[in-house]
Length: 517
Image (cartoon, rainbow, N blue to C red; front, side, top):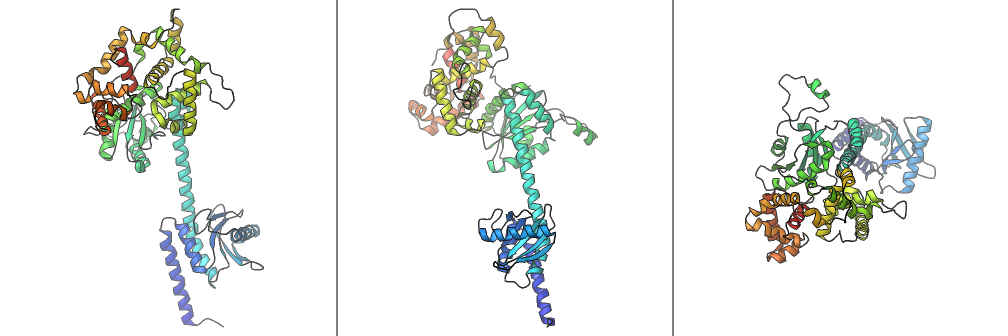
């Protein structure tokens, strides 16, 4: 019996309501999940998306929906595989021992099917046909967004790998990878360390990249979750008016906007920016350290930015005897032969030591190892070196200097020129006139500062192995008070003390050289 006009009008109105409901759901976040949930409630049967191989791709609870029972998922999977084999766009399959499965193919590649198990709605076929068009569009959008995030993550990890290679001295390998990813790495660079709110880090990185015109090598810091690192060519004058943009984009090192750091803090007021001096690409670790020191000043500066104005070169401390001393101190690590193939070798142990001295407990993120693995390696280093590097600031300072001297470009030639004689000691290395000149230059800003930010505050902190609670007790003040004094000392020195990488090793060595510890 044909439907009456009133029934036809009701069906049309009902269909229009369904289409409008689907359109509203399509504009929501997680549109596919929302529409499948609506279809489940509307039809009375579980709704899901199934691939042509039978894999359930999405359900009312999202991808790999645990709310979809295994028998139901299996029924939908079998039906989708059968429909794909037939090459049909839609069908109702099953209905024997199990409930019927309504399927309709979405306009996607690879083929995806909308499936509803045992629906109670008599108009299910028309409803699924209407839903399939909107679902196909939303599914393609969600898949494109997933692909974009995967590509973004892969590029981020590749850029992080380039930075890691630069930090460990593998410059040619870093240049090869960077040349493929673009931009190519310049021969002379400045490092920007940008401190910003962690939830906005990627957004801020993209904004800086856009303002820098693609000339900056920008990496979310793998160690500090609220830092963005930017490796850029030294600032140059922007292109003259009328310069063809297409031509400028072909330049592997396009000019940066003048005062990029000022531009960053103006665009994103929450940021603080530390900028290194211009250094050769092979000195990227030095540039990072300089930028961290500058950032310590920028945190309290009204401009919210600062450039590095000091000197972190400690190779002036040592002649041939110093380089030989460094090799002898590190010799147990250099001669170490791991008992098992999977155990870290000499270079990996020295890399762990250098990372820990720079980043402390955050070295586990830098090295991509578990914190328990880091702790085990530090205990092993204590045993090899015969000192408690993990606890004693004196041992840490000596190891820090030894690593700097051992990896210096002139170290090998200097060791070959060292005259035979008794083994040098740290006091011998620090007892030269050059070391005295260097030490006085390190401490001069503190000597000119007020007592609460001067030499005595820093000396007390160093004597307490750079531990804030013990230093506060020795100073007779509270830990927050001691932190405030050290923060003032950071401003006076223009160096970072409380945040790694810290200048505590240089200051300990300077005071040891002058006999004031």
